[in-house]
Amino acid sequence: MFKILKKKYLANNIWLMDIEAPRVAKSCKPGQFVIVKMDEEGERIPLTICDYDSEKGTVTIVFQTVGASTQKMAEYEEGDSFMDFAGPLGCASELIEMPVDSLKKENILFVCGGVGTAPVYPQVKWMKEHGIDVDVIIGARTKDIIILEDEMREVAANLYIATDDGSYGFKGNGCDQINELVKNQGKKYTRVVAIGPMIMMKFVSLLTKELDIPTIVSMNPIMVDGTGMCGACRLQVGSEIKFACVDGPEFDGHLVDFDQAMRRQRMYKTEEGRAMLRLKEGNTHHGGCGNCN
Image (tube, rainbow, N blue to C red; front, side, top):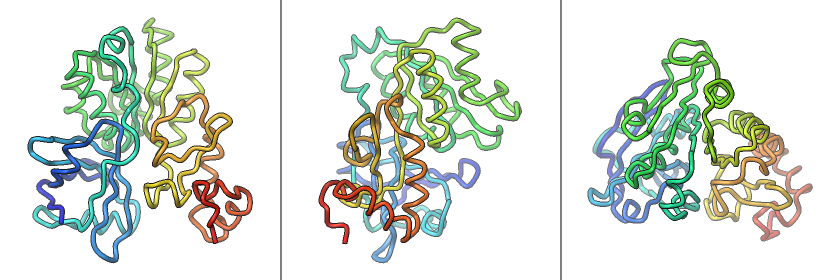
């Protein structure tokens, strides 16, 4: 069992929890995720890792209540336990695999939206710990749904807040803020990392392609088993078929077919949609196992 040591309400039905999971915490790297199961009957819920402490043996998760399972999770209190807490899963951020000396020569901009702020935080924190200064944009519709602002200010060289309604910080979305920094303020970035809603990552990638800035996105489509066998997180990346849970979750944003990913995400939610995907995708529907029946 994995005990909840801390529970905190952040905003807009978004919750933060510190979970006692020593073996997971010992192996965590920025960019990875876990799969949580509340009880024997519970759904497998994939969640990105917001933070971890290998000495204390804790892993921090952030989630938003969007369905019955996450609503039930939000009703758990400090002292309650999850039955399963599997991880870390997926590949670590490709940036942390680079030599630190090389990273210090880069000018990196992180762009996060919504709950996507949570997986950005451990990457920026890692950069800070290794003496690498990075800029961060947090985008939101309005001030009330911004999360982890104070935590991000402690680790980012420069933090820019952008709200669609102008209620806080820059008036505009994340793309507007990028344009402001690059085109109006003359900022030069060698790499962008965008994490958030798929539609947001799509438009950030379109803009950075125009600006000729290499871009990494963290894909968060539906995941079920976290091993690549269910095929739920199948993606078209350039000419290749990838599975976000084992090949990612990070990919080249200029190669991801976002339209297909969003269309597929909608279809996968219904039995009829899954049947159509089975027919169209053949052996790659199930991560190449071909046993969809």
